[in-house]
Image 1 (cartoon, helix red, strand yellow):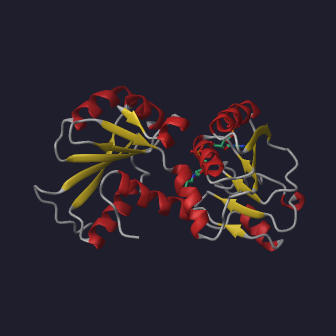
Image 2 (spheres, rainbow, N blue to C red):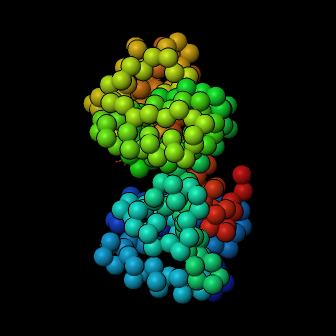
Length: 271
Ligand SMILES: NC(=O)c1ccc[n+]([C@@H]2O[C@H](COP(=O)([O-])OP(=O)(O)OC[C@H]3O[C@@H](n4cnc5c(N)ncnc54)[C@H](OP(=O)(O)O)[C@@H]3O)[C@@H](O)[C@H]2O)c1
């Protein structure tokens, strides 16, 4: 159990979810606050969608409550409830972090993509000028596509089971980043000829999942990047590594997001 010394001066943060059984943010943030000697605590808030607006109105006027991380199913609804969105939240249309200002306003942002790109940069991969095949166009994939374009990718091809989602996302990313060539295609498009393939689908989370891409069809030297964290070595990464492709794991995306979200909420964590 945490040994946090909570007093009347402790700054309070929350993770908003429904349900909250699976959330890990309290363990992660509170351990970091404790290690850094920061007088703050982050608590789970299990709120149903129909009560979301009521709870948020109450939090806005709670003077020692300073910020939220947001997860399923509230990311889109919270974007609508924010008074202001940073560009990362605005373009994606969903938020996973909120800062409460002293005058009672809520600022929202989405750090999935920024966390991913920062993790890749720290692992030695720079997207500038690269040809990118992104598998998946779901919630995390949406944020990642914008951030990869922002990082200067030359070309992004979004391949998704529901091709209409890939096409719609492609058009939005293209409009936001005209310097990058962006398109949406079907999930079985040819994966040859790319510098990097990113798996943002949930394929690989469970034993027996199909591979999100045929590794035998990748060009030699193509990097393979995963955002799934458990298992650490997904089947995709195992097969790519066995064929000599550089591989990148999913956890750095979360590690970097935690730092970015801590700083955004006004309670920066040490590097
Ligand atoms: N490392 C991190 O920090 C981090 C952060 C967030 C999420 N994640 C991981 O990212 C993954 C996606 O999360 P999300 O929130 O973006 O989920 P999501 O919004 O539900 O999107 C899931 C994506 O996977 C595709 N997909 C799902 N099942 C499929 C199947 N059987 N065949 C082909 N495509 C399939 C979906 O395609 P359709 O559009 O056709 O449905 C969609 O593109 C999860 O594994 C999650 O654990 C990691």
